[in-house]
Amino acid sequence: MRSPQLLWLKAHVLAKKIARVSQALAKHEISRYPSFLETFEQRYAASVGRRYGLSFCNGTSAIEAALFAANVQPGDEVIVPSCTFHASIDPILNAGALPVFADVETTSLTIDPVEVAKKLTHKTKAIIAVHVWGIPADITRLRQVLVGKSVALIEDVSHAHGARYDGRPCGAWGEFGVFSLQGSKAIAAGEGGIVVTDSWESYIRMSAWGHFDRHSQHFATIGLEDFVATGVGYKRRMAPLGALLADVDLDHLDTYNQIKQKNVEILDQALASIDGIEIVQTAETAERGGFYQGYPIRVVHPGVTAEAALAVLTQAGIQASAYPFVLHHQLPVLTDLVFRQALMAQQSPPQPVASPACLPVTETLKTHLILLAPRYLLELDCNLLTKLKSVLAGISTQATSSRPQTLKKPVSV
Image (cartoon, rainbow, N blue to C red; front, side):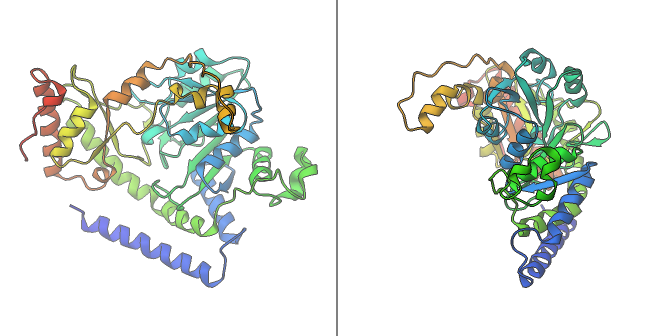
């Protein structure tokens, strides 16, 4: 059941978006760089505690721009989790570099600093730390791993708008904080992305990469004077009307995150004691935000798969979904550059070389993770909570005597 306050908030946000877009349309401010676009970029950067913000047409391009600014070259390596959407990985390949996959922690489901340390080589140029499902990665330990190394830390905060770590926003810790602003995110431009950084040189390099000549008067100061007329050649700028939509969401991000965080705490308390169900354990100084794709739990009771548990939840009328990603570290198109390049050139590819990556935690998530629907983080009530607890407890109880395929449909509560 939707509360009157939530209904009012959604209506208020919608009305603001319609009004702002209507004003821009009336002035035909629909392309290039109207003043409100830069205002949004500056506001967003300030909200994360960074000096500069630069918008892009999507989060994928934003990561590509950050990699360009970090001087990632063909032959370099970039460490990244496999437990993420492939748009965190594709930009590495687009830069000609090789993604090196690191496993995630069992507790937080975010990239494991211990595994990152094992993957570092003289070829490592950057690490992409994904704050998956709104859960902050362990930034302190990641930064410790990188002490004394010329390796850029890129935070992918696409799932975690407004999340915080040790009192500071996620996106404020690495050399770059990258955010998708796609329509399903907590801050939504329809399609869009933004990078925040404290480095003036990186800011201008990213602009030269994706904004043609927007800041061409500064190109010579960073050795790009030959690109003054054209930029590097990519046009990846955000549609201004999308910036207006995202700007309104930024106004109300904290309010929505507070509602979601309260419901996450209720779910944590209610589900933590259920046998065979594991909830996420974040770092002590971490505060979730954005909460993209919902509330993750792991089904760890022997003999019960997420698929079987999901079927029971669905039968009970509880909205949930399975692990949403493929096992990227097992895909030859992401791990074997020769195989990938042959396919892209429409040539007969050689037999792909098996990836050496072994990521047991990530592989377990594929068969044991469930995401409770995002709507429950906004619309959780006592009846739903009671029903959810009953169904999950029933799954664990039945598991001792039933095969996953024969788990019984629960009695409606």
